[in-house]
Structures are given as structure tokens and as C-alpha cells.
Length: 397
Image 1: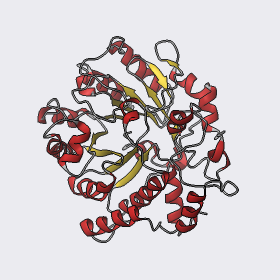
Image 2: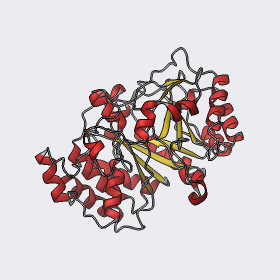
Image 3: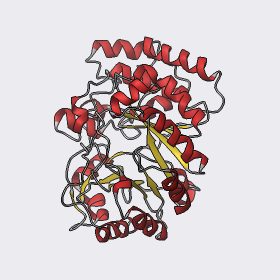
């Protein structure tokens, strides 16, 4: 998820605070499913050639008009994929969106299409920000995910080239068992590459990601505490499908303690070894958005979903308006009202966090169910002794 311009559209938030019941903060458009990569965890299950039925240029212009139809402050439009650079009309679409005053971002793949000429064109176009995926601190790890020899070096080069071109660069990392131990080293690469934002995706087992192992709830908790620490080094840190990060940020900012687990300690020690003492106040994203609340996803064929990782169809932009679906769909209304089942429904952080709706749906088929990746046990719901013990040790209970 690329959210680098959030502050731009909410600058002066006392005057223009975003009402998430009326409009999303982010609209993602999967401009194509085509991509030259075949990443192991790909949500889109992208292929080399686009499938039939992708939105045409005219459809794209109409979609952009629908985004503008939410009114000001306009949602941020993120053009993703697949690989958005495989759309031959990409810059026609970005030019039109920017001409409408819509903050527009790109999420391209690192392939031979991302040339220096392409970077110059992006930088000159008025694009607000660009996100690049980096899934390891070593070639063997990153390329084990991306499946292309030499891709690690190309990715680091691309991040630096985009930053040198004056673009706001966000680095996306999907955390999984294969790379969790490298997160401190990835943080160093982000800090030293010129990127301004690090967005960490917590794997949801959909698409090709359904074949990947998942981290445990306790590991998720410790990684979120580590990410709070990483936010002290001059980059903005955000998470995707880990809204419980906001609970941890709130706790730490109010004096809560960090956990004492092995994973957290090893990542924290490594972070300080690489980057030294913290250099800034923590910059951690805490806007209370989640799948369907502040977020909307449009697939390559126009189908609308609460988020890219939540394949629950809501309608199609060719026949229904984004604003009507966002504001009136019963599931989205329930998500925004925090009408959740299980621990998420009982939790005092239900609005600030609300759990991953995508992970709840992947695990139980219920988009309003509890998030099985969350370690937190609300008061009165101490049914998992191992997690209750962890809460006590971490100061969460």
C-alpha cells in the first residue's frame, strides 16, 4: 500500500479532517495483472500477459472521474498492478488524474521497463510518490521471493535513482518467516537509500501468498514493537494488514514497555548496531484506517473490493459508482462501525485498530470476524494462556 501523500491531503487537518464514512483516504487501482515477475507471495497472481477484460483507457478516465466524485479532500489514487508500467496508456491516465487535482502515486515493479528515462518521466509528471518492493537485506532472500537473479541489486539501485530524481520513495516489505530476521538490515537499507517511508506488509494468505507460511501472533507483536523502534531513524513507518501496530504505537507513546521476546531483542540489538542511537522522534502512521475504512480497491476488470487482500466483491465501476458503494454497502458500513465478532468486537482498540479484515476473511470467511494474527487479549477474554502470559510479560494486560 502506498500512502506517502496522506499528509498532503490532510495538511491542516483541523480544517479538512477526512471523514472515512464519506470518502476513503486511498483508492488503489490494479491497472493490470500483467507483470514480468512471478513473486512467491503475489496477491494478484500476476502473469506475463494481461487477461481479457481489463479496464480500457476510457474506463480509466471514468474511474478517475469517480474518484474525484468523492469531493475534496480527494482520495489518493494509487496505480498498481501487476506492473503499472505495462499499461501503454499509463501516463495518459496519470496526466488526467493530476489535471483533476487528484494526488496520484505509482507502484511499479523493478524490471527492465524501469529505465532511467522512465524514472525521469515519472519525476517530471507530477506523480506524488512511488513505491518499490524490497523483501530482503541480502540477494538470496530478496531474490528467493522475487525469483529473478540480480533483482536485489537492481531494486536497491532503483530506490536510490528514484530518490535522487527528487521523488518521494516508499519501500514496501512483506514480512514472512523467510525474512523476519533481516528486518533490521532492511531498515538500514531504507534509511540509507534516500527513501522516506517504510511500509511493512504482514502476509495475508491469499493469491500465491496462500502457499506461504505465516508468522505467529507473538512474532507479529514483537515485529510491531521493533517497527516502532525503527521509526526513530528519520523515516515514516507504516504497516499493511497489521492495524494492531497502532495499538502498540499508542501503548509505547504513553509509556508502555517493549516485550522481552527473543525476536524483538535480536532485531532491536541489530538495529542499534547498524544505525546507532535513535536520531529522531518516532514517525509512525496511526490513522485509524483499515480494509473498507479509508481504503478501497479496484481490480483490473473494474470489480470493487474493500482492499486488495480482501477478495469480497462489492460491485463494478462499469455499472456502479465508487462513492455509492463505499458509503452504502452494508459490509463496509459494518467495518467502519467496528461491528466485529470475537476478540476484535470486545477490544477497547476496536476503532483505532479493528484487526485485519482481510486476514479475518481469509481465516474464517467472515470479514467481520477476529484477526487471528493479533496477540492481544482484551480484558475478560483471557482464553489463550500462552497469549495471556505474553500480555503480562509485555505489559499489555
